[in-house]
Structures are given as C-alpha cells and as structure tokens.
Image (cartoon, rainbow, N blue to C red):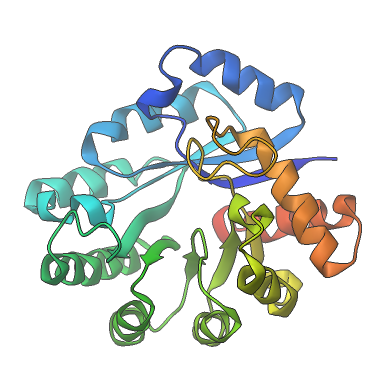
Length: 255
C-alpha cells in the first residue's frame, strides 16, 4: 500500500534534531507523496531544501492567519519567486483562525482575500485554514475565489459546512482528529463527502491521532487516519489509500 500525507510541516523546529531520520521512516513506511507546508516566510527556504532533496516530498507556501499581520509587499514577492519552483504545488496555508486570534480579525480577512487573489494569479490550488470562522471563510471564498480550486485543510466542521465547501468545488482534508471520541460530527461529514473529494493529512507535528495522542505527530501516522476514514466509508484501507492518493495527484500534481 502507498500512502499520502496531504499536509504536514516537516520544515518546523519540531523535527530539527531528527528530520532526516523521520523522512527515512516515511520511505520505510511506504509513503508515496508528502506535502510539506511552509506557513511563514522564515520556513520557505527549508521547504525548498526538502523538496529538492527528496523526490517524494512536495511543497506549498503561504502566510498562515496567525502571521497575517506580517504579510507585506516583500512577502508577496518572495512567494511569487518561490512558487516558480516546479515542486511547489500549492499555495497555503491561508485563511482565518478566530480561535487563537494571533492576528487581528480584520487583518486576517484582508490578507486572506489578498492571498486568494495571488493563488489565482499563480494558478495554484489554495490550501485553506479555517478555525472557528466558518461563515466568514465561506463569505470570503465565495466573493474572492469562486473557482474553488483547492482544499479545506484540517476540516473541523460538520456535514452542513462540508456541503457548502463542496458546492464551491473544494476538496476536504481529514486530519487525525477523526480518531478522537468527540469527533462524531467529523465522522458524519466523512461519510457524506464524495470519495473523489476526500484527502487525508496529519498536520504533523500537530493533531496526533489516537493511540499516539499527546506525542509528536509524524507523516506516516496518516495511515491511522486513512484507516479511520475507511471504517466510516465501509471500504478497505487499501482501496481508501488508493482513492486518496489519486485525489492528491489530481489536485496538486495534475495527474
């Protein structure tokens, strides 16, 4: 079986001490594709270094809503330059986070809209972060990004919200939280989402699935998430992994 982690952060400090060993373990565990996502400008060089060094790792760059206040013309120029790299295949993650509010909400909205426009001009699928901001996310996407070319990363809402994003054309990515006891609404959404619009992710080093919750997350734990998705879809893990791999390749690799 070949597995895909559609969203992680291998460039982050959490892997500083053992990054190469973690990546070798990904290979040993049968990972076919891994997408590592640089969320602030300081991470961009490390993303490029990883995609150049490892054939199965691809990258995305963008400014996370936590860092929206740091976005400026220089950031935009850096993003335009780095996205010319053939293995930078997505723009993000960008969006709204009204749970943490590390950047003011009005700035988050402004920079989200700006980056959606930029993703469109670069013809890259956008990776959307939305936490405690469903209505505002939907409103901005409908206004600024009608193509729906991209993915709702780390989906944390319910079936009704899934329908809104699907109707716009987005893929929906399921994180390891699907294994949590409290994730009944997420599991219901998984059952509702068409198979061809599903992705799976770890968001490593965050959101570690059960039974490893509380420890650092790693990309091969996506197997646990895929098995949980398969259980909800009532099909085999092998078949589910194949469907998710094909979805990833279609969205990000144009295969």
